[in-house]
Length: 239
Image (tube, rainbow, N blue to C red; front, side, top):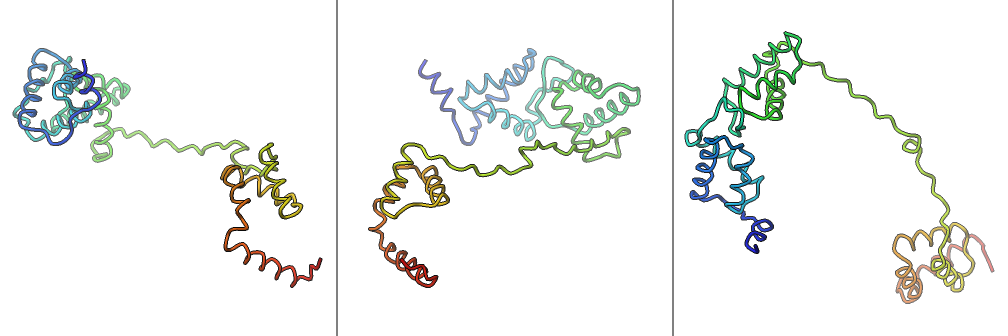
C-alpha cells in the first residue's frame, strides 16, 4: 500500500530509458489490438512506470512521430483513438468532408462526427485540426466562417467610477495609538489622524506603535525637528 502511495505522489522524472520506451510501445500495441482506448492504456502505463499521466501522453506523441513503424495503427476501429501526428491523406479527408457537409447545409459538428468514425480520433482533436488547417490554408475551404465581432465589455457604474476614499474610523486599538501620538506631539488635524489610521491598517498597529515610541531614538529625528522649526520661523509662525 505504501509503495502505491509513493507512486501516486512521487512520480519518476527525467529521460526515458530504452526499456521504458519498449514497454510503452508494446503496451499500446497490445491494448490497441484488443480495442482498448489510448487514454486507458496511458493511465495503466503511468502506473506501471511510475510517471505522470501528462508526461506519458507527451512522450507517446514523440515516440509515434519518431518511430511510426513500431506502432500498430488501428484505422477504422471506432473503439480506439489515436495520438500520432496527422498525415496529408487525413488532412485532405478533413478538408473534403467539411466542405461537402457545409455545402449540403449540414453543421460542422455533423462533419466532425463523421470524421471521428473514419479517423478514429476524438472530436476535440478533429476540431482543433480543422481550426489549424483553416488558419494555415484558408484557400482550401469553401466556407470560412466570418469572424464574430468582439462585443465591447459593458462595465457597471461601480467599475467606471473610481471609489472615493472613505474617512477612516479608528478602532479601539487605533484610538489608543492616536492618543499616544497626541500626548507626545499635540493635537492632530483630521488629515493627520486619517493618515495615521491608514498607516496602522497598512503596517499593523504593533509596528506603528513601536515606531512611534522609538521615534525620538532615530538619528534623523532631530534633523526633522530642526527642518520643521526652520520652516515655522520662515513663515513667521511664532509661539
